[in-house]
Length: 140
Image (cartoon, rainbow, N blue to C red):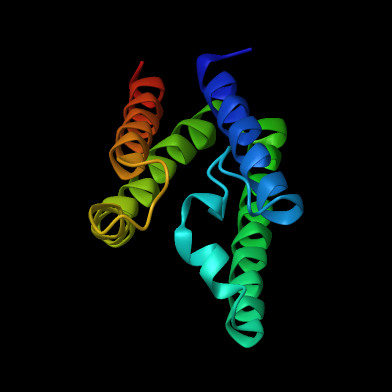
């Protein structure tokens, strides 16, 4: 198995854990579920808002599942060049985290709305490592 396939399969495995938590235990604080956000519990006080939040969480899980199944098809059926380009595409797409999501979670973390504290920094480092691994594997 090539390094590229290995990196994609590890990423699929990690993200499947995330999707599973979003679908079956969104209140968890592991595997990047939404339990780290204090707003998750607060939203339960307002059933209409909580249903909307649950809808968005499940929508994200569904979109991720589509994406992961497409990655699995790339691992199974695509040639090495397409797999390499897929890692570059993953790196570029993942960079968008630092454009919109990171500033938002950092702000919530600073306001004490994320538990554990400094989770935004840990998540930012983790996402940066993903990008570095994607690019490293693509250009080895």
